Image (tube, rainbow, N blue to C red):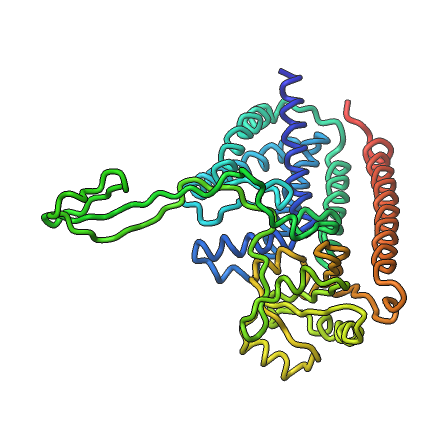
Length: 412
């Protein structure tokens, strides 16, 4: 039984850490998912708190997972995982039955699960959850409470700092379809022989005041006493959907400019603002110098938004960005980059680089070599991020060891 308790504790700890981490590195993605659920359940007034819920959920899952993995404050951790999983198992059952949003978002964009799959996953996880919960008094307490609380506090601050960094800049690990290196046209292709959507046609006929459902195989075509009422087409099986779809842009007159962007032989900068009313104005204005640079023939520049023409006109008259806006689907733009505005660099349909508005490239630095700048930027950012992670990991490890083994006596 001790080995079984150990396995259940470690399994739940790893699942919760992974779930909290992938949500934490993409706080805006989780906030968007919260907004979708609020809208589906007619709770739109909670939309302004979507980001707060996103941060709380990710950090709570992560710290519960850490507590389980390290065996800290096990009585509290056992209650936390039991209440957490009980609530979400019931919730995902409701979601599986009503299906208000196709993707549950429980593992962010790292692993896509339907609502039905999520419910089954939670049912399976309830087995180790109950094992841990019912054995909560049998887990040994190795350290003094203060030491364990301090350790969990340090780790909680650590995940909050990661979430903050990814919110202000971009996710440190990009699970989105539009990650750097993706060739968009190839990601839009449907492989030969891939399963197609399957539909069923339902025919409604009425006779003697009674309406019945029929299919195309059994409808009463020979009986003239039945009168047709309605026809509905229902999706019964979802076919293959390419990673990138609904990738379409239009100019203010409604003309499709998608191919112009994808197959431009020059470098293409895309300024992405899903909603100009919610965009960082300074970020959009910062892109003006970049747009002027591209107008010189060095590259192409397009500003994309899902805002209606009236809002675009109002924004343009007030802020005078100096470039026109083209239209795209809001969900597509939110999936392309987690920043409003954000900047994407494309060459021959391949995503070369992505920037948050807080780190837009300066036009002067692009004059000699656009690709070189992008490569240098990512190399320097990766090296800086790697050094920071290594230093923080080392300091955190030393702090945990010091707290648990030196500053606080072990229990007998």
